Image (cartoon, rainbow, N blue to C red; front, side, top):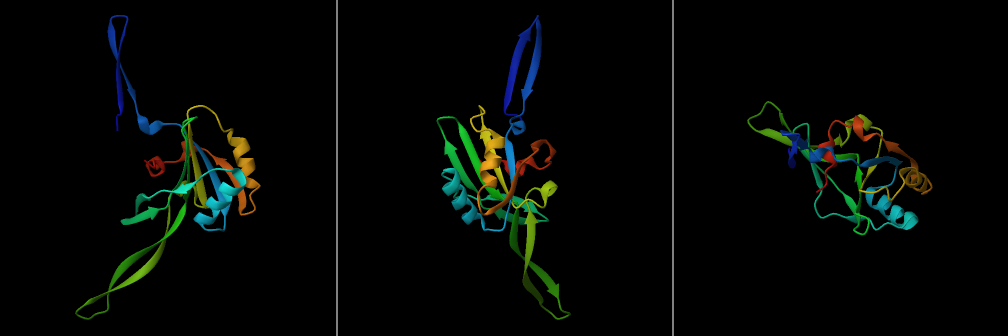
Length: 172
């Protein structure tokens, strides 16, 4: 989707520069932890001093013809134009499956299905997405600070260029 079109007149010719807003740069940190999302957000707030808060609207994704809602925690610092998002990579969703038992009526049984937000990193439990114009937060220091939290098993920077479904990481 094209968000910005700029016409430039250079040496008597018109040049069309296209800027795709979907190619915005962001940093991504992968976290391994066994605690639920709300507890991880609490620990990050406590040990790092952020103010992650649960968003009213979840991140919607369509996985195997099933609508999946991923809860999102957000922190905003308007002074430095910094936004941080904490989102789980794995969510258990209830899906109803219809089975015919040979009778006149079909029976519908709920089934729990595990869905993964970023399929290139199936082993990652949570992601922290950092959007910043200036490098206010050095990513290596953030990774070190996250790894010192008792509830975090490991944390590391993830190469965002390897992700094919970047649309799932647009939270607004």
